[in-house]
Image (tube, rainbow, N blue to C red; front, side, top):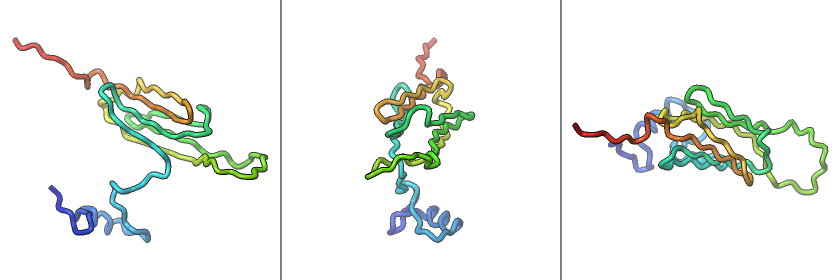
Length: 137
């Protein structure tokens, strides 16, 4: 068990911080805030990932699988939109997410659905990861 310092960081966190010194202040991994809304959760059937994609179409989003890496990317347009906005508050922020997905989940059977501004990805459990009953001889 790792002991925490009075500031809530482990000695490993401090060592890691000192090894990769930067000008910014150190933030422990579990306190990093992502600027884009993403929910990742596991259910009995598989892995679910929900990504906010308000104002985007399925043509705007690139979804790629490379081995056990799942990548979801949206590149913001170059600003060639000729509209003259009076007010513009809907942020279409570019994002590029990549996750290494456990082999317990079958990425080749990945399902993707864009509905109501939410991209829902579902990777079912791989056949070898599903519970099996064993007969006692």
